[in-house]
Image (cartoon, rainbow, N blue to C red; front, side, top):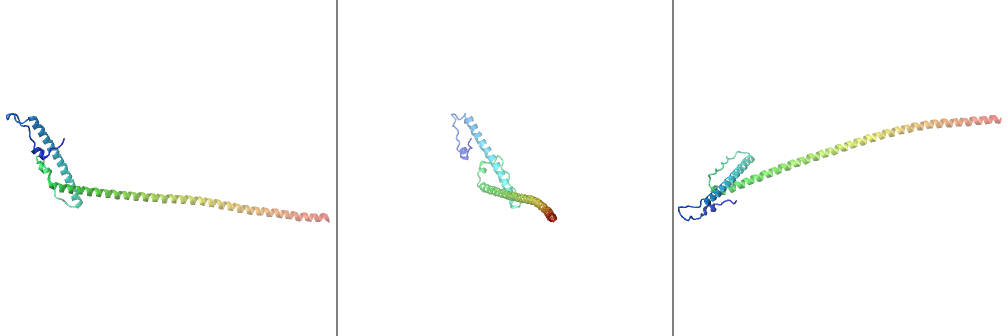
Length: 194
């Protein structure tokens, strides 16, 4: 349903009655009055919503300025004429309200951006610390493994040295016994020859 304009109301013409005693068509007048009532109701509701938005915007302006603002006018009651809805000063108030809403939106985006930035930096620091911890763990494991291998190698070297010493000792004993056998064999051979 389209809302009536001020011109619609001013220029409304009802059918002329056939006789003056009959008056205007009652149904036609009732339909028109219903349209007028609906239009006034819709405009009153819209005006109340705009007044509430204005109060919120003015409160926000006052809050942002850090001071106390002038009290906000009460919304007009439903008996106010429709000419109050088409007021040029409302355009300035609407522009102020829109500006305040834009500033609030900007502030919210800046705050969200800072929060996101802090979150990303925190995550990066956590990941960095995790990488350092992982590298340190890997280093410690590698060093422990190398230390075990070193200890094993030192043990093997010690065993090889012991084996070498034992082998030399046995070889020396064996060679000395061979030498003594050779010497005793040559003295026995000399004894047989004599």
